[in-house]
Length: 151
Image (tube, rainbow, N blue to C red; front, side):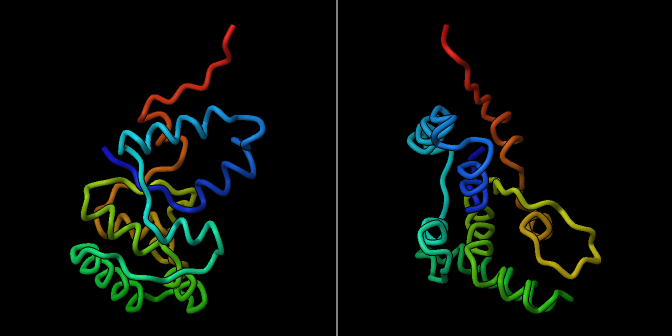
């Protein structure tokens, strides 16, 4: 399985439990997973992390097709307009579309919400489009990550 990381997985890890000053092994391990092509993201995530505002196209046609389907589903859903617009302006629809095309799982800190919610959340949209979605800790366990102190 390949994994595509959402921006919030980097942000929360850095700001909370895997701060670069307290757990550099996490970041080294993550670099190794990228080098092995088990972990990736989309360009928009990098831009989100740099300046927290994005919207640009993906270069292949297949993600664009799923992106369009995701946009249509979200626009037709009974979502809070502000939350919907925020979701659509970020990398979230692109990462879900890319994961669907390449058969990857999305890694996010967002939680599934009840079906009648008016908020757009990555896990709910992943489920709607048959895209696996896991949190950081499931991701670490699935890849057998171990951060052990030496003797």
